[in-house]
Image (cartoon, rainbow, N blue to C red; front, top):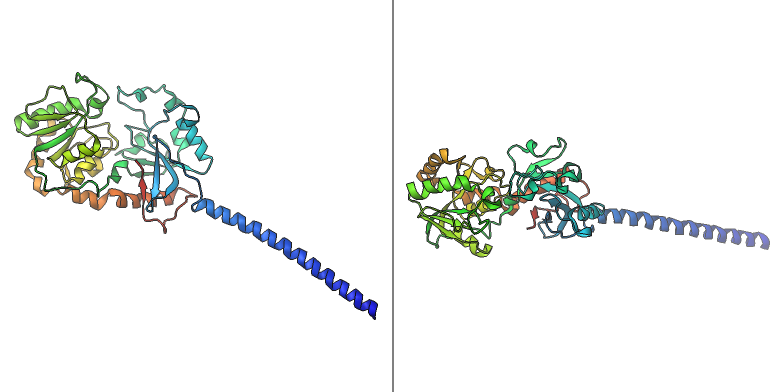
Length: 367
């Protein structure tokens, strides 16, 4: 009887030890599973390291100011400085879970640059020959009327979203207390001290601009403010200022009535959107790469060259009080409106991002 009792106790102890061992390993397994799940969630929803990278990269931020794990590429990979080279930085961070998408902010990029004064017009450069941007980038934000001309991948997700869509409507706003000293403003920075052709003059379509300036200043006797085009032969009513720091430059909008934008190879014309925010109607070249989408009956008029410029100018002057450019831009663009469109596009087309549609109001762009 004693022996049976002892055997029974030994069996009970053995069973308890076995159960304890099983429970121990179950707990360990559960911790491993939990750790894996928690690690996955952390990587997906916030703990991914996101670098702050210089151009050509543009960081994106959520509405709380946190960097998101999607970075834009705004122009070709031209920086070749070892580990700090553009491609080397891309390669390093794409392997760490950062998504890269394209944004058309520099001339025709991802198409070949047409400006003959730009080194990127050389198709033999490594920036073009070594890298297939359609293969390297997951999606594209563009500015083009005809995106298929530049974005050659038929499977590439695209959206008509530009850096100029994010002009700060709180920083740039009308000030009716400032007297209007000029009828219009035109920005074309100098390329040299002799007013010879260069990168700026090509970008701002100086050859056509000169003919239009003659019409405005000589024929219509309008007073113009030209920023940057010093040492050029200009009509008497065209007043010139040299390059200004941005904080001083933006004050000149307040002194003008409308903005003249003859540019063609301009992908993200911030001069245009800043001027619209200061409530300046616009005269814009119909063939401009980016910014055409801002021009309508509420904001201004199109022209193509000096042959159809005068009718467009006359329409603008005759209907001047009917334009509401600041109101239009605020209702359709700016950080919040453009940022919500960007958020929706990213959520629909990029997987494994560190934000959600529900927890984020909008996505903004860095400078």
